[in-house]
Image (cartoon, rainbow, N blue to C red):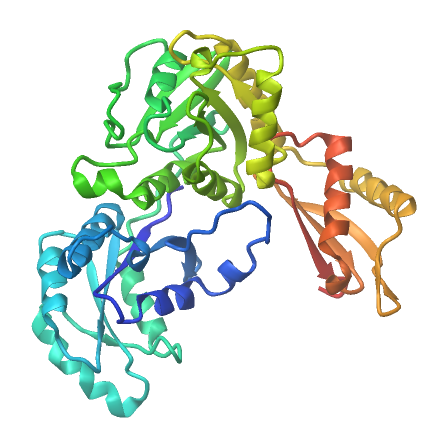
Length: 437
């Protein structure tokens, strides 16, 4: 089920990032501190009235050396392309500026729902500041305070009214949905065509040729699949071609709808920072992951080449230590037959559920092997463990004090669980709760 997308748009210094953080709330702070994940705070998840939504902070979209107003315009246009609802933010203390009017002109043409937020209305006496903004033509302006968190409820109520209706999942439960993500020109479209055995997607040497995600259904050896092709992660035009963060926004739609994410790397060019950014989102979204090294036919090889390249991947993608690596060539179909069996395995592991009694036996054996840590004379006691979710597998440990579950011991337990039950290709989440909870 696809989440609605909300974009916060406005000129600099009106408090977009502050409101972004307020809406996202604790979701950012509870993300595990995993080494190797490149953080990019342009995109996160919020929740209102039991409905989750994705939210974009356009302040994080930087457009090189473009002039001030051009920067604002490009940021707004990128957000408009992606958003279902737009929060147009202005600064109540400054009144209406030329830049505000520039953004308003763009939003008029968008035909998207726009909710006007007047920030820095910090107390009831300042509520009169909002009246001038009626002239922008977006209906009722909502006075809010990012610094104090005031007025956000009314603002989000209005945003919620414009969310599209929730749609049921369009594919059968047994269908494996997988997407291909990665920076432009690593061969995602070619790989889609090769898997499907037909020219379903336009292939070009120009980065960013494909402009919309495409779902392709097929059946292989009795298993139904859907490829969610996110090759179309950029649009034509100077700004879209030079804004890497735009590709991340497009990739997130595909990641969200997938069971398995194929992180495609150019074997000829090697690993760059953008590969880590996009892969980090797949990890944090809790999706099963396969790392695919494409263009392997173009790499000069000896008997050590694959092993050396695999080690480089492990060094760069520390947070994806669980992800299998497949080397192939979409162009020559070299090793292509190895891909779908790996996709099947990681999809199965992503949905794997372990019986509670067997899980508890393993936890107790692990504690006997390696006693729980102590802190200031107080020892961690694990009373009970249970798996509470799949996709990704999520385990809750009921303990005497969650603060005593150190990162190193959590990792030890994760390794033991993986050794016993596999879980190859899927993140494994382990949380500690006080026994009384």
